[in-house]
Length: 174
Image (cartoon, rainbow, N blue to C red; front, side, top):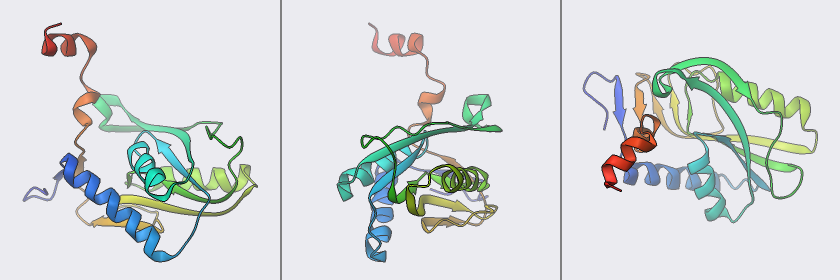
């Protein structure tokens, strides 16, 4: 649900999963066939996992991080992992790069540049996200929702960003 001022988007688990299914349909209806899904951890892990199951394709993981401060609300320096975890030894062929959103677009563009410059076995690369913000300098190949007002997206699992084991222990009275 988008707030009236357009500054916050609150997403339930049901809405989140429906958006991932719509992403799958966009890719499927395009007719493009791919060999592997490469998700960007952490935001792309849940969509990547679901797409991997729907398309019955292997899931590779590349870790990136730019939102660290204030429970993940402040963007900092971008870190991109040097290695990709994949069940097939090396990522190759046609790859669908999956993340949750194109915010500024810097992460996706940097990852694509890294992949094109350091992973020659990749023959074709396309990107898919749930949300693309109006301020994004990067336009993914597949996007489910365009957000012209650039709201902060409150995803259903973000409560875990500030939940610590002691509070969980208290919650469950164990």
